Each structure stands twice: as structure tokens, then as C-alpha cells.
Image (cartoon, rainbow, N blue to C red):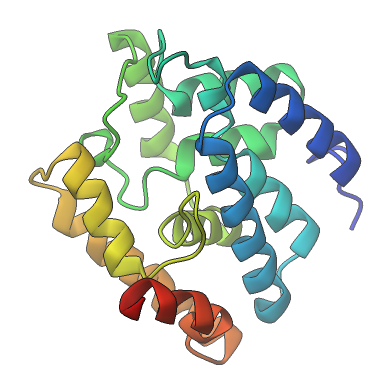
Length: 208
């Protein structure tokens, strides 16, 4: 499969990512590298394209490059989408939007940085209402729920960390349920419990 018109090459991806990190050298970048590694690992086991999975994971939070002191004029999901669309990488732009919404409702957003204008929120809501998630959307959603800047941790610990930072709302449980449905889906595709692909890291995150 020729990915040249869908995603950047690994070399170009690393160049763009370095540019983004230099704009805002914060932990978001380390988190993206962990998600990219997790996505590549699961893709190899589940029959997806590992190069595409890695690149989508690397860029899912690219919108944070526009933040200064963890503040920005728009939320990272929208700014990431717009940046990747300008570069011509529609598949990557899509992931910038879908990764935050395993449950397709903008009110389920778990970040503390929802700075989108009302027009931008309408844009995201409209996109979600029309989107049909593919395996790559689901993969990056799952890996985002495993990855921190420090490494891969249990999904339960990651979900609780998000709630402790951003709070709990009426859709939080529905979002959690969707994460576990996605994990079950990839367990079946991989023919094993996905946790076992990251056994040592998850064990350390739980037991120290």
C-alpha cells in the first residue's frame, strides 16, 4: 500500500514533530511518542499497517505545539486538525479529532483545555456526527488510553488520572465503557489480551 499521499514518510514525520516540539517543548511530545510506540506494536500484532499506526500516534496531539504555558486560543483537537489539513495529510488531521472521542459526543471531552470557539465546537460536533470510525481511529483512541509521557500504564490508572485533572461529567462512564469495548475489539484482532504486549510496563505502573 502506498501511503505517500495519506501520511508523511517516517523521515518527514520526525522533522515535523521536531518543529512542533521546539515550538512547545512540553510533556505532550513524550506522550505522543509513547502512543506511537504502542500503536505500532498493536498494529504489528493485529494486521494493521505499523508505519501508518506509528505516524498517526505520533501526531494525534500535534495541536499542543501552539500552546504556551498550557494555554492556547483553540483546543488542541481543532488546531491539530487544521495544521495537518494545511499540510495535506487528511488521515492525520482526522486522528487529531477522533482520538479524543471514543464516545462520539463533544460533551464527553475529557480535557481541561477546551478553548474552542462556538463555531469550532460546531465544526467538531458536525464532524463527529458524520464520522464512521475505522480501525486506526479506534487504535489511537485505545493507545491514548494507555500512554503517558512517562510510558505505558494500565487503562484504569490512565482514566482515573484524566478524571483527577479534568473532572467527571455525565458522559465519563460512557466514555470508559467505550474504551473497554475497543480493547475487547483489539484483544480479538490480536488473538490475545493487549495488556500482555506491554506486560512489564503495566505491571510496574500498578505495583511499582
